[in-house]
Length: 151
Image (tube, rainbow, N blue to C red; front, side):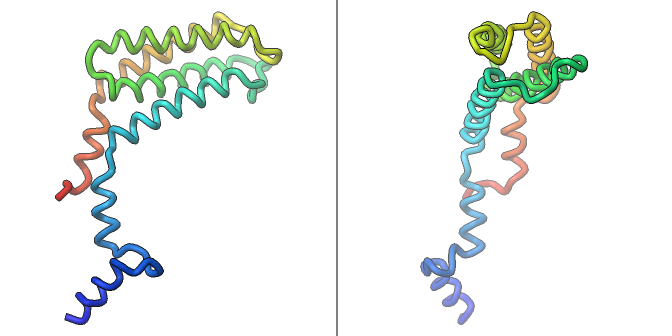
């Protein structure tokens, strides 16, 4: 019984921190869809900032930036397609328009210039992300199901 009393005191003592059982309970109560949505908005912000700031890659030596565009938009589309489960074609159209808008905005910045091939790579990434989402649907729900259920 001494262990139970120690555990009870530990749960309420701020200096000792939460007891392990409380940490497990908090972990199970995380709203995974909300976190997924926050991650998606963070992806949009990062894409916008990286696309409108001076380039990080040397664009003189090939088409490495096209691969980055393809992969980035594939991840962005796949991520949001996990939340938008109906009429994903609208999501795909919105992400393609987002990519085109960024390319047009690059013309207004001093360090960037719009590129049709970048827009095509963005669109190819959207298609790739949409296809991955078709073969791996409902990923946030599957990940949440792997954790112990809430009590």
